[in-house]
Amino acid sequence: MPYDLIIAGTGPAGLMTADRAAAKGLNTLVLEKRKKVTDSLMGELVTDNALKLLRVKPDSEYIGNKYTQIIGESLDTGGQIVVGKGLLGNSYLLDEDNCQEIMRERAEADGAEFRYGAHVKSVVKEGNQVVGVKYNEEEERAGLTVGADGAFSRVSETAGFTHPKWLLSYGIRWKLENCKGVDPETAYFYVARDVGLGYLWLYPRSETEVNLGIGRVPSSKENWDKLPSLLDVLKKYRKHIPELRDSKIAMQNGGVVPCAGIIPRFTDAGVSLCGNSAGQVSSIVGGGVTTCFHAGTMLAKHAKRAIDENDFSKKSIQQYEKEYRGSKLARNIQNTGKGMWAVSKYAMHNDPLDAAEIVLGQLDAKTLNALIQGNAGVSDIMTLLSDFLPMVMRIGKGYLKSIALSGL
Ligand SMILES: Cc1cc2nc3c(=O)[nH]c(=O)nc-3n(C[C@H](O)[C@H](O)[C@H](O)COP(=O)(O)OP(=O)(O)OC[C@H]3O[C@@H](n4cnc5c(N)ncnc54)[C@H](O)[C@@H]3O)c2cc1C
Image (cartoon, rainbow, N blue to C red; front, top):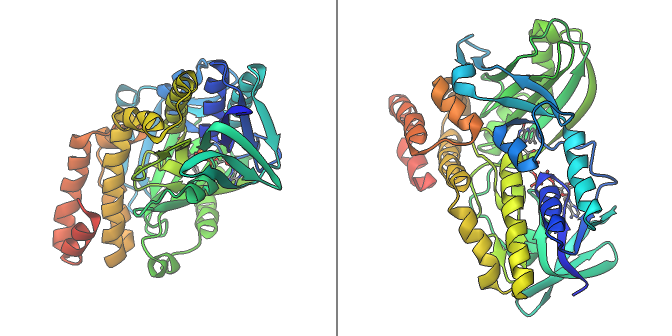
C-alpha cells in the first residue's frame, strides 16, 4: 500500500489522529476539502484534559483565555447557577487557529502529507475490505482509512455505517469585538424559551472580545418552525446584554454536533470513523474537542499496531472500538446521549420549550459542572432524570410515549 493511513478531514479528530500517527512513524496522507486547516470552527471551551491530550501548557499561545467561574442563567427568569472555582477546576478558551496549526505542523514535521481542496467522495473497497478513497478525480490507497470528515461523513456513508439514533444540534457562533466592560473571567451558558432545546453561550476572550453562540436541537420540524431563527436569537441577545450592545461582528461560523451518543458500529475491515462522524461528542453540552483528541490519540495507537501486525481485518480494527467504548469518556457520551435522546423525544410530543428549561434550567451546579467537564456519571444522569420525570408527570402529556421511544 502506498500509505499506511489516509485521514479524511482536518477537524480536531483528523488533526489529532494525524499528529499522533505521524509521530509513530506512520506514512500518513490527510485529505481536506477546505483550503487550509485554520479559520474554521474547531470548538473552544475545554478543560485540562484537552490541554493534556494536545500537550500544550495553560500559559501559552494555544490558550485564548481562562475562566474562574461559569454561570448558567435563565434569560426568562434571571435564575442562576454559579459553578465557582471549587467545583470548576480549570476551564479554558482555546485559540483555535494556533491549536489547529500546531497539530498540522507536528504531523508535517513527522512526514504526513496534507492535500487541500481534496473532496473525498467514497471509500474504495476490495470485497468487504476498505482499501482507500476516491477524492476529486483521484484515488489513493492505504491499510487504514479514517473518516474524520464530520457529521455528514462520506467515509461513513460509503463504508456502510448506520446511525439510527442520530440527533444533530445546529449551532452558529459570532466572534464579537468592541464589547464594553466584559468580565473576562466568567463564561456564561443561557437558557431561554426562544433558544429552544439547547443553549446560548458567551465566552469572553478579553474585556472587549467575546464569542457569542447558540446551539439548538430540533425535536421535530414543526417544533423548530415555532421558534425564531438561530440568527434572530443571537441578534436579540446581543442587544439584550448591555456589554455587547455596541459590539461588531468580526466573524460568523457554525456547524452541527451529533448529540445522541456513539453510533452502533464505527470500525470495519480497513476503516474507522473518528470524532463527529462516530458520534464521539459529549452529548448534552455538545463538547467535541476533548472527545476528538481522546479518540484520535487512541486510534493512532491502534493504527500503529495494525501496521506492525500487517493486519487490517475487521477483528484487528475493532480492537480500537472495543478499547474506546470501555473508556470513561465513551461511557459518559453514551449516558448523556441516552438522556438527550429521551429529552428530544419528550420535546417532540410536548412543548419543546419546557424541555429546555427542564434539562438546563433545573440543573444544580455539581451536575452542570460534571456535564461541562465531560465526566457526568450515572448518578448525574439520575439527578437529571429525577428532575425531569416529576415535571413530565405533572405536565401529564407524552411521558409514556417519550420514555418508550427513548429506549431508556
Ligand atoms: C457552533 C459550535 C460551537 C462549538 N463549541 C464547542 C466548544 O466550545 N467546545 C467543544 O469541545 N466543542 C464544541 N463544538 C463541537 C466541536 O466543534 C465538534 O464536535 C468538533 O469540531 C468535531 O470535530 P471533527 O474533527 O469530528 O469534525 P469537524 O470539526 O466537523 O471536521 C470535519 C472536517 O472534515 C472536512 N470534510 C468534511 N467532508 C469532507 C470530505 N468529503 N472530504 C474532505 N474533507 C471533508 C471538513 O471540512 C472539516 O475540516 C462546537 C460545535 C459547534 C457547531
